[in-house]
Image (cartoon, rainbow over the protein chains, first blue to last red):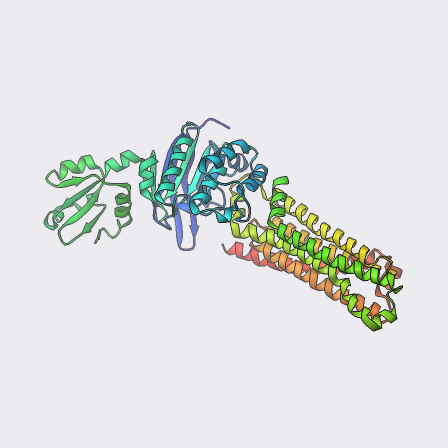
Length: 292
Length: 246
């Protein structure tokens, strides 16, 4: 494996389906970090992940993973990555023990001892059928399998969706532990932004097949502000500064970027800190501009 | 490929258990019938056929059901893979379609061969001290079924491997090829058996004399393979068209 700075490098990637286009997207996932890949359902997250895994063919653009071209070195890359989806892909009539025998045939670097350690640590019964596991247990089993063959990159597609907060937190802790090794990287696709606020180093926000934001999570949040004002004050705001505005009976909440500039420009108005969820909410309605 | 074969066997084990119990039960029944006939100094002849023996001849068809279990076992493995999302998981790994197809071929060969051997065992017990003609017919029947089911599995796996990655087609191919194979074999068996039991003409002897005994199995099986291949090709073409549209 060559030395690389970014675990994933996507450049000008395009894929067109009937009624949807992933439009010339580019972003990087630095090695040793967690990238939160956010966007509403149908925004293009899963399509991007499928393209990364070469499950669908790209129309144009380039993808490098772990410093290698994702098509030319597909097998080498897939030996070193793990993909986890929201639904468990293992047969429900099998047990966690059965799975170890099977996966030792699937991954050349399969480490049974690590896998069994994870099972014990997660409190997963070895002899119980997978079909009898709860959703949280199934997700933990997937993650145990994903972490037991020395993967350098975890790709998680809505992996924490539908889980209760306790299990979600447990899983997020596992991710942070995994990242203790600075060679490991996670791409975490989710529309649950609170999870990403907790653990992500970087975020990429995709909507309708286009990347709207990509960069450090803290910088992204700090660079945005939610301006609260009366309707009369709202009329004086330059439309070019507005991403979108929520109008209520009492006034308006306006999402703006470039906080430093707008705090000087609108010094008399109240400016609140914002969250990833609010940023997503206001960006999604950017074409409408005003909503209630 | 040990792990993948293990997976298929684990997924279809209940069918193997059922097949074993079924075979054991009827082998016992056949054995008791034979013992009673030997004790009564009876053999398979017109006299027996005219009395109770005609009903007993139904036991000749027992091996067909054993193959049905083998076929169901394969089906269980295929459908479990499909329903669980196993194929999607495999496509995110470096395992490759070639190894998956290889493991499937081996596990299916193993299951169908096991069914064949169990059938031969059953025939041995059933025909112990029985007539030559009956033994030949039963062996020819199960051999034809063996090649048909195995051929259908090979054709479907090979075509689905060659033409596409997704497994939807494999299910259609296996079902179509297998059902045609079984239907074709059943028709052939009924023809063979009815001609032999009811008439003097022995189709099996006819094939043996004309083409050598080996052709009595291969020719009918080849005909069924061909039919299965035609159906398989149809499904593959439909899939190829769908892929082009996508």
